[in-house]
Image (cartoon, rainbow, N blue to C red; front, top):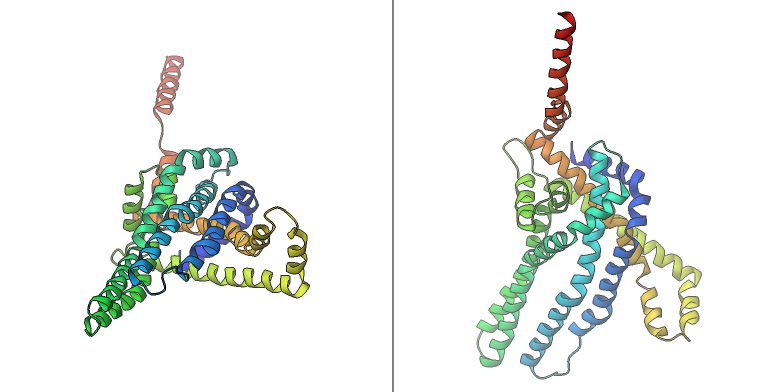
Length: 332
């Protein structure tokens, strides 16, 4: 299928299975919400605040600690929720693509059995995709230290410039890693492989092969489409809330509650929660359809599947032999 046909098939699949997916992914979406809330309210402000205004070394230490908190608290919360939602959606979507009736109970069992493996896959993709960001940040920190040690040298500025340029280039690397490893989730479910094998297999399936185009174009078409949907979805909700005065009313409602300020702040993240809840299973549906499309394109999976359906089993052969023997005895 072309990229447009792949995305269209996935959206039709989501129209049919979306309510079932959403019913099973409320709790994982709340975990994603908790990760987003912690990152937005505690991690991001910490990057712009310091207790050591005149000490660059101490400021770098604060950045390192804040980054570590983000990786140990916010990232695991979000990844755990997104991984479980992805597993649920992939399981239901793969049943649909294979011609079977989607089984919610089986999807829940599959998600429970594969949760640790999928979390490791997500964590591996996170560290690989952000490797350039971490490295560029270290280079910028080195430039800051050189500016203290060698205040009259041009090397400090050059090193900092390299770090800044690397920071921009690292987002290209981020995009490449995401697109090459996007099929790891479906592979983890359908082929029941370990994280390392799932990632390697995803990179192999997504590669260009002679006249066969790579799968990156389809992935980024879908990612851009969902980015536009997310922007319109969250922006529309926020605009409606502001125009109707609902935000002020909700703030007044929770003002007297215990932890009222926390609840009031959490309310502002509701559009992000809804977008995550709806769009993570939708994107998982897209990569599941893309997984089958890549296997058909590169491995003839549709032919293998058809052959497996019509290939006689050992029991069929025994029954056939017994039937032939009975017919022979009757004719005699």
